[in-house]
Amino acid sequence: MPGALDSYANLPGLEIQGLVGLILSYFLASLRIGAFVIASPLFGARAVPVQVRIVIAVMLTLLVVSRVTPPDVADLGTAKLVAVVFTEIALGLGAGMILNIWFAAAALAGEKIAGSTGLGFASQVDPNMGGQTPVVSQFLTMFLTAIFLSMNGHILVLTAMVESYVILPIGTVTGLLVIARAGIDATGDMFAAASLIMLPAVSVLLLVNLIIGVITRSAPQLNLFSFGFPITMMVAFLTMYVTVSVMGYALFDLAQAGIRAMMNLLLVLADG
Image (cartoon, rainbow, N blue to C red; front, side):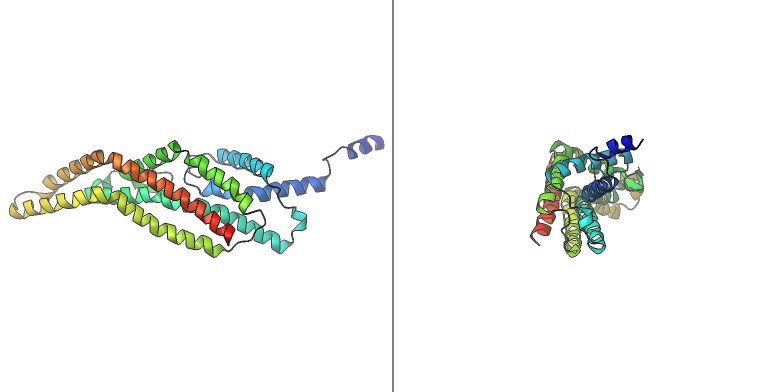
């Protein structure tokens, strides 16, 4: 029996202390990419099972560890380790939320178009939002997602997150105010992008409402609900059909702007 124990002790990789340190190093390397997978608009959707997210995070962590060497947890003090953990989570969540905020511009534009045409009543439960969302918003969101996948945006953002470990090594403590400022700037840009997307449809609908107002003013016997709403909805569908190619280019620019904003955040953190 003692001889058998001695033979097991001579095998490499069976030391509990080394195994625990290796697991902790892998865990430290998975925080940033795991937080990004949770917060990103495509990988973090509720339609994606939790098991799939875990597998994606683990596989990407293996890719990260093959490129960079995680720091030894034993060399980090308690205060330093806590700061590193919160920084890694903040980096992943910040990058994912920047991309998520830009993607929300399509849903916001759809809500404004639906509200201007009376299509706000045509809503259903959106599992990603967790509430009632107009069908127009869901249509634009799916349109944006299809464009994002067709341009290999998912590969670009994952590559950017893996490369961020090179310019921002694990253990680098950065200022969180930069992430908060980037989120505020992305929110303002989101409203501006949503305004540009919904501008053609809302402008046409404004002119139609003005014409309907003049007609109902000159002929009060006409019922606004039976006369104005059908015309408004037909014009809305016709406008979206005519401007679908322009809207596609606008959503393509929106996806590119979201990827660019996420990469700029990582570069600013690396320079700062």
